[in-house]
Every structure is written in C-alpha cells, then in structure tokens.
Length: 364
Image 1 (spheres, rainbow, N blue to C red):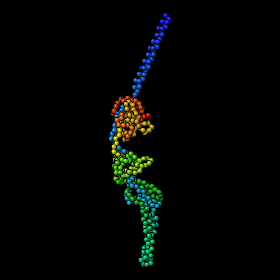
Image 2: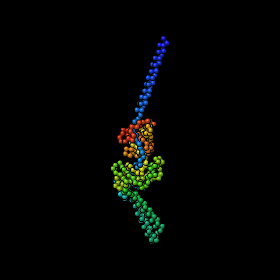
Image 3: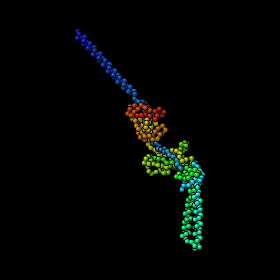
Image 4: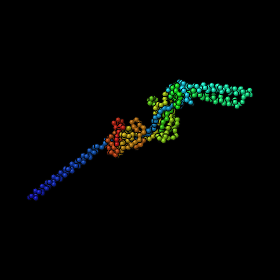
C-alpha cells in the first residue's frame, strides 16, 4: 500500500514538473515572439526617391579682383626733389596732362652749357669759312652740341612729368618737397574702354576655355547689373602649386563704373553634362568635415555613399559621382540610419518639398 501511494506521489510530481517546463517554454517562446515583433517595429522609417540623369548646364563661377587695362608708373629717371603735384588719388587725367613738376636746377645748368656749346660751334664754323679753322674742330663742337641737346631734353622730360595715357590716378606716394626714391610718384590706371581680371581654371575646365569666348561678370556693388566680358588670354602653363591655369578676361567699361580692386564674379558657360540630380534633402553633411554623403536604398538596406557635388539647381544638386542613374535615395529619416542598416520605406518617390531633414548633419 505504501508502494502504491509513493507511486501516485511520484506521478503527481512528474506532472507538475512537466507543466512548469511547458509553461516556461511557452513563456520563452512568447518572449522571443515579442522581441521579434519589437525589432520589426524598430526599423527606421524612411522616404525615398528615384533619381535619374539630366542634362546640366555647366555654368562655372570664378572670383577675381579687377585690374586696370594699362598701368603707368610716373617717376623721373634720376632722383630729384618734387616741386608740385597737380593731381590726387581718384582724379581723372588726360594723355599729355602735366602731373608733377620737379626741381629745375639741373635744367638751368644744362641750358647754360648748351647755349655755350652752340656759341662754340658757330665760332668753329666761322673760322672754317675764313680758312682759320679746321673741319675737326667743327665736328667736335657739333658733337658737343648734340650731346648736350639730348641730355637737356631728357632732363626737361624728367622735370615736368606728363601722363602717357588717359586714366585715373590709383596711387600717390609722395608730397611736394619730398625727394623721389624707389617708389613711383603716381600710378595711372587706364579704365576705359575696358578693365581686366585674372581667373584660374582647373585642368578639367582648361580644355573647354577658348580665347574670344564671351563671359558674364557680376559685382557685389552692382547686384542688378551684368557686365560683358571676353577671354583675351589663356596661359599655356599650369601653376605647379595649385594645378590651375591663368585666364585673362577683359570687361567692357566705357562708362568707368568698374574700378581697380573691385571683387568680380566671372560666369562662364562650358556647355552641358549628363549627371544625376538629387534632391537637396538627400544630401548629408558629415560633421567635422566638408564631406557630403547620400543614403542609397536597395532591397531593404541602405548604403552610405560619399558623393562629389556639382552645381546647386534650385532645390537639387548635381552629383558628379557617388550615385547612379535609377538609384533610390533617402530624402527623410537619415538621422536614424547607418551604413548597411535595414530600413522600412514609408513613401516611395516622395515629393521633395519641405522637410526638416534638409542638409542633415551626422557623425557617422
């Protein structure tokens, strides 16, 4: 009888243990199912848009500083003291206008010597005519007159300084009473009919630049005006430091509105190129660097693609490399993404207008 009760007790305990094991397994399975459900719900939500090739006008902008078309430095050939200066910075001058007068002591001294040399020459001619002189003496006197005449004219020219061109005074380095030195007294810049700028183009653009091409030029000081320009020189050698070529542009300036030193923006149309265009909201700026990225969606997974951007076109960017024709790019939800992550698409080919994720910053 005791054996019978023991058997029943053993069966009851076994049944209880089996029930507990089943309940535990059921709980574990429920926990796994709940976890799977939670993970599915935690997939990042994104909107995507398919991108494609477009013909993009290659309108390149270069910056430069305006220079006068022709520059003349007004200086004497030898040091001398300044007696008067008739113009100042910003004054317009005409070709042949007297600008500076220097001390004339040397002129007076040479004038006396030249007059004496002429008297000696005439005396030598008279003596030769009456047979009391020689041709050698006449020739020597003539040589002395010619030499002093040339010297006198040179000193006069360097005592009264005139402008060789019509233009504007762009610099003045001395005042009356100063002794001239290594710097020019005045600098005259020719501003009409044109002024110049020098721009620097990359090796890629160099092959497309041709002499005689027309360009548009804008100035910050004249925001509503566009000035006509022409490429006049294309330098044939590359700068080894910057890997760029110098290109000179002449800007029409008959009314002299453009002044030396102004900041210019030169716009050159270099044709068109077939490139992918992506919404600006797809572009991600990497924090701490100038690198740009775009998330590309493919079969449930996103990749973090570094891109080279071209021009901004309204609310889009030209992409030189990093995104292919037909790719789906992420335009919202980038904050929750990383390379290789799975994501859930909420809206495919979503419109580009209005989203707070524009130009998102990330530290990934």
